[in-house]
Each structure stands twice: as C-alpha cells, then as structure tokens.
Image (cartoon, rainbow, N blue to C red; front, side, top):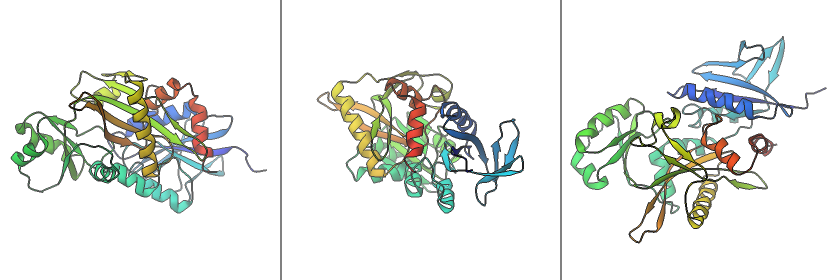
Length: 331
C-alpha cells in the first residue's frame, strides 16, 4: 500500500555566506511542520554535496537524477520541496529550475520570479514600472569606472552600497561621505560581480510577510525593526542587536496601506509560498507617511525568533497550519 503521508524535503544550506543561518531555518521548519500529516527530512545542499539527515542522525547522499535517497535498502522519493536556502542556489532560480525539470512542486516562486527578486537593482527597476516607490540607485559592474562626484550629486550622502545579486546581509555598507565609497565597493564586490549604490531613505523600517493560496490571501501583521546599529546588518539580524516590535507602531490607515501594497507586490510577481517584504516608512513635506519598498525576501528566515513565525503568532495563527496551507495548495 502506498504511503498516505506526503514526504517533504526541507532544502537548506546553500553556497552563500548564510549557509549556517539557512540550516537553522531548516531546523526551525522541521520543528514547525505537522509530523502526523507529513514525513519530514532535512536536506543539506552545499555545492555538489547533497545529503539528507536520517532519523538515526546519519547522512545519506541525495541521488540528483531524481532527488531521492536510500534508507534501509529502500529508495525514498519526495513529494514536495520546501526551499529555505538563503542565497544561491535556492533564492536565485537555480534550484527551482532543477525541481521544474523533475516536476517536483516547491515552496517558492518559479525561476523568473526568483532570479528577479534575487537581483536588487533589476527588481527595483521592474517594480518601479508598476508604481512601487523605491530608492534611486546606480549599478556598477566589476572593473567598471565610476565618478564619485557624480554618484554623490545624484544619490546624496549617506547612501548604501550593497551586492546587487546576493541573498545575505554580508557586503552591505552605509557610506556617510565620499571617502568611504571606494572601501565599501571593495567589500561589496567580494560578494557579487554587480554592486548597487542606493540613496538613503530616512524613516521607520518595517517588514511584512504574506502568502496566498487558491482560496485565501493572508497578510501578516508587520514587524517594526529598531536597531542602534547603523542599519539592519548581520549582527542586528542574527546576533540580537535589534528590537523587533510586532505589530509595528503605525497608524491604522498606514498599516492598511502597507498591507495592500504587500498583497499587490505579491500578485505583480506571481509569487508563491511565504515572502517577506521590507519597507522604509518615510514622511513627505506635509508629514504624511510614504511607503518605500526596500527589499523582498522569497526564502525568509524560519527560526522560532525570525520575523515570519513572530508575525504568524501575532496574527493568531498556527505556523503548522500555515505550512500545511502552502504545501497543499500545489496538490
């Protein structure tokens, strides 16, 4: 008799500087999933070394021909892949293309969506066409000449320098004066061949998760990010140097507007599963709130203290049910 429970791979690890963070997300997801409903396995992907963690603590290699593994002499195939790799190959469309070839459903958007959201500069310019407000930015490629004075004239100071195609917080610098630009670019180019220089937006930083299925749309309460660091960097994100307030301290009217924008961006992208959108809420000359899209994360962190689980709890939902919603939506 065929096993009635679906077998799910939590695909984590990856090749970026956030490999270990992704592994923590994998463990978080493992703890959240409904074990009575699903057979859950963690798959660690690193380069060409792919292994599944077995119940006895040992590892078994993944057969990349069909994304299966052998345990106790029996071959096990997966019904679904929940991708929680932060960075490549899980956040840039590469892993999605592999699963498409195998006709294996997965938790994120497709190849185009992932490639688009992974490149911050391309994404911002794409969404600008739909009326989404984003910061002005300049793209530099490795080895390309640039004019510091022209950059300062166009973007002003301070500004941000960040790897354009990278899923992590590494390589990001806040540049306060023109003398800091060249060192910041060197740091960013260590992470990516393309670097984005982005105008500074002054305001409250918030982050909001959303997911949709065939019959429901769920926008979670937004989280306000308060840090004494220069910005929401790696230490703020992962080493506790931040205060996270859910729901964010916004007016009811602004909260509704942000939620509507979050839902609209999800639809524009034809996203899938849970995505998290970061914003800066600034003020116009009349003191009104202005919603600026900062970044989109299609494989958001999923540890117990990450934004999404916080927001799920604040919404009065059970993360176990949310994950089941996402899986079952594709069957």
